[in-house]
Image (cartoon, rainbow, N blue to C red):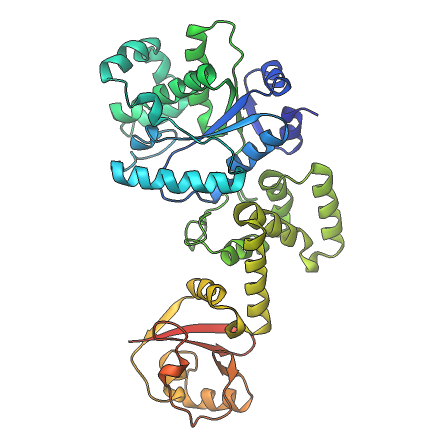
Amino acid sequence: MDILKELKDRGIVKQFTNEKKIINAQKNKKGVYCGFDPTSDSLHIGHLIQIVNLKRFQEFGFNAIPLIGGATGMIGDPSFKSDERVLLNNEDVIKNKTAIANQLKSMLGEKIKVVDNLDFYKDMSILDFLRDVGKHFNLSYLLAKENIATRISTGLSITEFSYTMLQAHDFKTLYVDYDCHIQFGGSDQWGNITSGLDYISDFDKNHKAAGITFNLLTKKDGKKFGKTESGTIWLDSSKTSEYELYQFFINQEDDECESLLMFLTTLSVIDIKKIMVDHKKEPFKRLAQKRLAKEVVTFVHGKEGLEKALKITEALFSGNVASLDKNTLSSILKTMSIVSINKVKSINELFISSGVCSSNREFRELLESGSLYINDEKINTADVDVTPNMFISDNKILIRKGKKKYYLIKMA
């Protein structure tokens, strides 16, 4: 089975330039690359489809090459953006590159070669670039590119205008020096990818390079997948914990699961179809969501990350958070919203000042029914003072109402 058929069967492919060249590249184990600009110190869920696709290409015999845009990240891709990106300083780019490279290696294997395109330009003067690269790009050709044309009316600086030339030169450099024959990206990268192919053809009319773009992963309502009210879902566990990532996927709607399994996992199409058949028989068991969450969290954070997510999930479900080890407890506390209150003396004040109980009456009723907990220990009497011994971390107390409603209280 060839990679292109695999991608088509999954519903991933949007466009490609030359099927024969793609098949030959697979047959001869050539390189395939995708770029990641270091705009932050972590990749996010929107990058996940491209990372998984690099893994997919690996499994089909390609040499997968993740490219970090140490140079292009200093400029910013204008493709279909409404505004110009805020330029990063060199210190931030270096920090971001290191973090992203480590993430890519953890997901794709430590032996994978992560390439930085700054190496292509750091010894090249502006005159060298204009003479050796710029002369190959006709102005009317660039202006006709949809990814550029959409920005003309709102304003496009020469800085961003040069981005497509830099990406084209990246492709040509990888083609010549790294035996990389395929570039892929999201559907918004078609203009940049074809610019690279045209640029390569100026040097080799019989070149073997090809490009592929993939459909954007969208929800059933047409909105871009990964955009949430709570903000970005990061792949760095210090920004979005393993538990939060697991919960994000476990809470997906039934009719989203099949496409998410197709796009974001390396499970076979046959296995995914079987999962969906089993899921539809007993949807209340959420078999598809559980398998999706398991596969994604394991891919991003490994088996240890999955075990951590499951451990926290079970602790929250069973109301046994305080029994977790220190590191796991610290991880779960990061996911909780903090309620700050002034220092209080009694537990009655603690529950009311924090808003957990709306009145003394509710506090007494919940106390009598055995529904109030401090650090998962049931409170049986109101005659208890709040003491430093109750703090589990930095003047914080974990209180619970009922079976699963946790609140993290910090006293000033």
